Image (cartoon, rainbow, N blue to C red; front, side):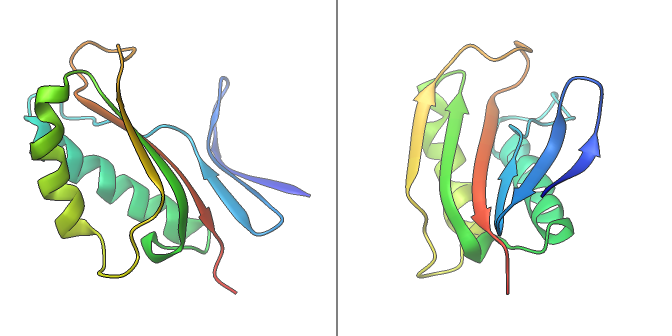
Length: 116
């Protein structure tokens, strides 16, 4: 059985299957912020969705981070490093990409295990 969270016409914010949580790419709502502010907002969204799905950032299985400009890598990592709990860093990729909204600086996709 697949459980979906926050289902819209085009996509769901999350899908849960066999104890694995798959999140849609999370992007900031406040595009007036710089990379650090946008990253803080996106990570808070991820925390919220993982909690709704019965998981947490300590159970991340893999993460893909999309940046519109690799010059923002250090600023994003500053926020990322502060957000992670020590000893729980997941496998991660970070790539430069053109995002759907040119004002977004970051999009983050995560897969996590459910808590049991």
